[in-house]
Image (cartoon, rainbow, N blue to C red; front, top):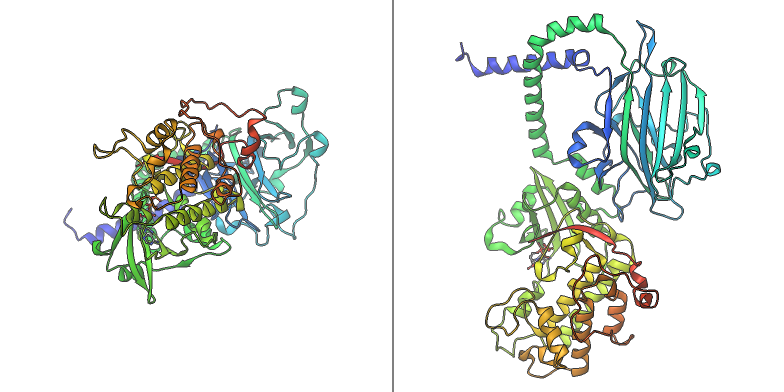
Length: 596
Ligand SMILES: Nc1ncnc2c1ncn2[C@@H]1O[C@H](COP(=O)(O)OP(=O)(O)OP(=O)(O)O)[C@@H](O)[C@H]1O
């Protein structure tokens, strides 16, 4: 019996799967939802039906695209709980009551901020059910063809939704009296009178909706933009007892359902994996293409051809996210960065890198040419830097080879170029304020607080820049060194010790053969130490660092002994604060951080 041809077994599986979808709506029907999410994690994603640009990120449902720096204008998005609930039974003439309490946070990304979000009950769920032209003022719920029956302004109640502050909303529906009440209050507001309903009205939902409805959230942005987050959500409803019909299903389904469901699930997952592997994730494409200056999309086939099938002979180097290969695309030399599966922190990171770097234009930043997401591969294509990376130029030479080493002027030029690029990233725009969820950092460049805050900030960037300064001037690697070098631990400690002994100039690379401007070299080394101050609040901003380098600001003061690292770091006093105004006085998040 088991040996009957595979094809027969296969057609039976298909048949069962079809049966599952036919029976599905009756058997899997959820009569009563009891949802409680104190916060949302990526693992919760499978509990929701999420439309193209929406996501679960940063511990919240991001109802519209949450990428700062990417173009997020004129979007509408929706997120539903995956199962519907029974709002009423026509046969039994009963209507359920429900309570939906959620915390929302609306963070403007333009001045003024954009539109807003809504709690929704809908007949259907899924991408295709977002009404056309529902961005902007229509909140992704309706469009110009539908009108609102009641509106209440919250400003009169002292509530300003678009303020980046958590606001709690409670929507209660009494199925018996057909009464709807809505309460809105600041989440940190404890006074009870603030929690009184701001809207109460009679509303017969049964005349507008079918018996089974989906619940969720809808949001939009317009010309002006904002991040629309739901941070937590509780939803409960009263059960409608449809037992007479249900019992029959229970008997039938007990024997059949497990087989049907398992085979259906297996087939669904199998087909989904196959399709996704081949065409890539449509969400990735949608999000990237929504970016203002989306880079070009390449086929995997093209990139394989360009790099000789990712031949190791073409390998340019390895970074925290994957391997970089040299390639030839349309007669142009390119660098192809192939993310390794285990090291990248997910598709959001990839999307962030494409949309953010794709939007950056600076002469000192490598240009992103294109990307590819096919067969589970995530690949970025950059313009090729023919001279390779800086470390090769500084460290590749024989230790004593003075002839081929980078001369002082070139080193100073490189340092100023990096400072300009970082200043552009930090101050020129908001683009760097969100990059990836995870980033690989190289330990020698990681600021001490990184291990406490677990993410990169503008201040940890300044620290890494400081290490780079010391590295370029001294020609030594930043991390642990072997016995050949006369410093024990890290370059920062070594230079700081020399500085304390008033011998900082001894840190300059011997291979320069004393051909450098002493004042300039001393200034760069002191700036390097100032950037590596253990207290992040005491580091200069990139703007100040750049001004010091080009002689527009006085050299930054540095204590003769390296201060002890303390956490949490002492915040600057009012007087001390002057130089740090550019930092916004806080540790500004860029990324989560992983050592490598
Ligand atoms: N556009 C490019 N042109 C030439 N070589 C490149 C290019 N991009 C990367 N490389 C080489 O590949 C190496 C790895 O680069 P990658 O960007 O993956 O990591 P990284 O910048 O060294 O570190 P991180 O992973 O922290 O970003 C570089 O050190 C460099 O040698």
